[in-house]
Image 1 (spheres, rainbow, N blue to C red):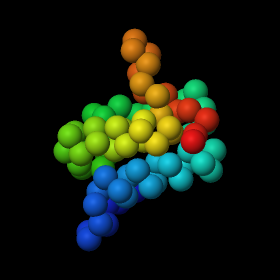
Image 2 (cartoon, rainbow, N blue to C red; image 1 turned 90 degrees about the vertical axis):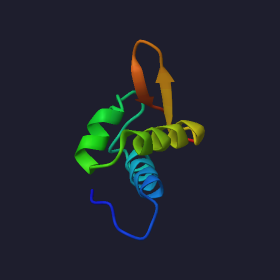
Image 3 (cartoon, one colour; image 1 turned 60 degrees about the vertical axis):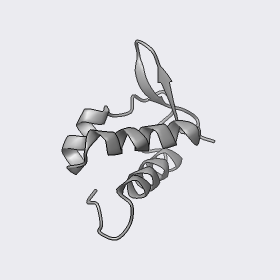
Length: 76
């Protein structure tokens, strides 16, 4: 995925991740990539990626489990 100029990187990554979850590419119970992995791959600041994760948790696509990590849920 490449970040396109003109639109918020947070919105772009949230859209791509939620689309992957709804399409079944990322399934319930799958581990979600770490903030570090995503920031390195997309060349984004880790704080930006943390906002993405927070938004996906807020929307019900992800859940953070202490000691386990961030996991994909069934979706909203």
